[in-house]
Structure formats: structure tokens, C-alpha cells
Amino acid sequence: SNGVEDYLTDEIQELLSTLPREKSFDGSYLYQYQGFWYRSIYIAGMISAHRHFQARDSDTILITCPKSGTTWLKALTYATVHRSRYAIEHSPLLTTNPHELVPFIDHPAYYLKINQSPTTSIFGTHIPYSSLPHSVVDSNCRIVYMCRNPLDQFISHWHFMLKIAQDRKMEPLSLEEAFESVSNGIQGFGPFWEHVLGYWKASLDNPHKILFLKYEDVIENTLFYVKKLAEFLGCPFSDVEEKLGVIEEISKLCSFENMKDLEVNKTGRLLPDRGPKNSDFFRKGKVGDWTNYLTSAMSESLKILMDEKFSGSGLTF
Ligand code: A3P
Image 1 (cartoon, rainbow, N blue to C red):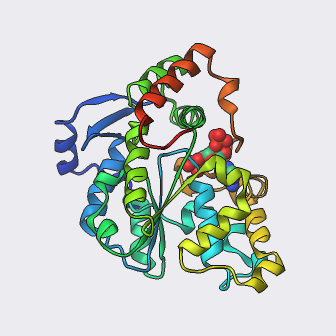
Image 2: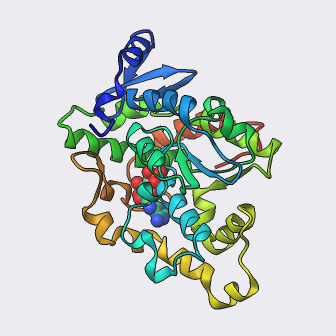
Image 3: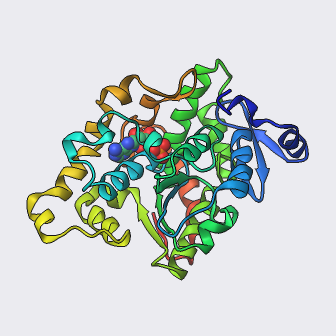
């Protein structure tokens, strides 16, 4: 067993039977647990992470709401932190998907890999701030959070779930139905605004612990943010490295165009016979693709909702 089939233990089944549930974009179910919506596998994974994941002071945890740039943030951080161990032309990122190099702490399949690899120090998760394992909050480990424009995140998420539904021959929600769900806060790891605001507020309270990034800012000025990321993680680029163009090399290695065309990301899969394909994580990589999908009534209504939810926080999109 690879641990994925086993995740629905009696305990988890029993818990699920007590939770409110709603349709997910892919036609499966999301369950409301501790104020957020999850697929069952992530509830099992989160409970397992609460019990077993022990963050160390030297760890880095990369956190996102899904489809906000997780794969990219994992690549950038991995390349930056391990730059003296691997020259760019030998980077494991050239032959391995970022989700394999930077495992999720809350996914049963990848959790097994963590146990097998005590040297791993960079992890990923979508767990909301209020439900993080205690050791992540209480240790001196660092958190990097990346958020994305909610309209682009929605369109990216909808496409991703559509592919999953096709793969599993399920009946996905229409764009209109998915839009309705998101407007009610219902999407994996949603409500979106609760997820983002949790980390936004925590980053204001503790800026040395949590670096808060926006996908759009990093797209616009990648070099600046790679430098900032390295400083935040305690491994700043030296003057020599800067002169040699190491920051440019890392940003090029991790660029959408480069990553999407790598053999491993065109043909690979994280789990041998199920789950998303590596290629599903690379769609367009653009800012503002929502304009191609949302009617003006939809975009207006979502913008008004988000303005309302984020008002007074100091965070804008
Ligand atoms: P789109 O669907 O808008 O193209 P996540 O990694 O959190 O699952 O998010 C996936 C989104 O990030 C997708 O957005 C994907 O194309 C984009 N993405 C993946 N790799 C990227 C990269 N290296 N640079 C920029 N965007 C990237």
C-alpha cells in the first residue's frame, strides 16, 4: 500500500459523517472542518500532520491557498536554499517535479516520503493558519505565504479541477456553479478570504516568522523577490553571487516557460496511477486570465465581495 488507499480509516469516516458537506468543483465532496472546506484526503492528512509532523527551527514551510503559485514558490525556494549544493545545470528541479522535492505535510502519500527523508527541510501545505500543527507556529521555523488575485485563483482552480474530473470520469460543476460556490466561500481550503487574511494578519504580527508574497508582484519583479526570499530565509546572496547572475539563473530555471517544457513536467505524475499529472500544474502562468472566462457581472460581483472581505485589512488585489 502507498498509504493513499488507506487514508479513510474508520476514525476519519466517522468524523466525515458528522461534518457539513458540499459539492467540490470536480463533482466530489468537500467537508467543512474547523471553519474551512476540504476534500476528505486533506482532512485525513491534516489530522495526521497534527499528530506526526514536528517542525524544526531550521525548517521552511511554504503555504498557499491552492492554485496561488505553490509549484513556483516551491521551485524558487528549493533552488535558492540549495544553490550551493547543486549548480543550476545539475539542479534536481530539472528532473523532478517541485512537489516531490518539497513534500506536502498534509497529504498522506507525501507524508510517507517525509519520514523516509530526514534531510528534507522545505515543506509545503495549504492548511489555514488557524489549523496549523502547533510546532509550525511555536517553533522558529519560517513560513512563506503566497497569495494570488482571487479571480485568477478561481479560474486556475476551476481548470485544474476540471482536469481531475475528466481523469476520474466524474461530473464537474459548470463555471457558473463553481462561481456560486466560491462566492459562498466553498472551495478546497476556502473561504479564500479567510485563508489569505489568516496569514496576512499573522505576517503583520510577526514579520520575521512569515513572509507574505503576492503572485502578481513576484511575476512583475522576480529578481527582487528572490533576493528578498533569500534574505528572509537567512541565506542572502553575496555580492559575488549577484555579479555572477545567480539570482537571474534561479529565476530563469524556475520560470513558467522553462519548467513547463521539462520532460518530467510534461509526462510525469506524482503518484504512479492516480492524482494529478505533473503537467496539470502548468497551465498558462499569466496574470489576468480571468478576463477570458468571467462575464462582467461575475467579475464585478466577485470584486465587490473581495473588497468587502478585505476592507480594513490593508490588503488589496
Ligand atoms: P494558471 O492556471 O493560471 O496557469 P499551484 O502551483 O498553486 O497549483 O498554482 C498553479 C498555477 O500557477 C497555474 O496558474 C500555473 O500555470 C501557475 N504556475 C505554475 N508554475 C509556474 C511558474 N513556474 N511560474 C509562474 N506560474 C506558474
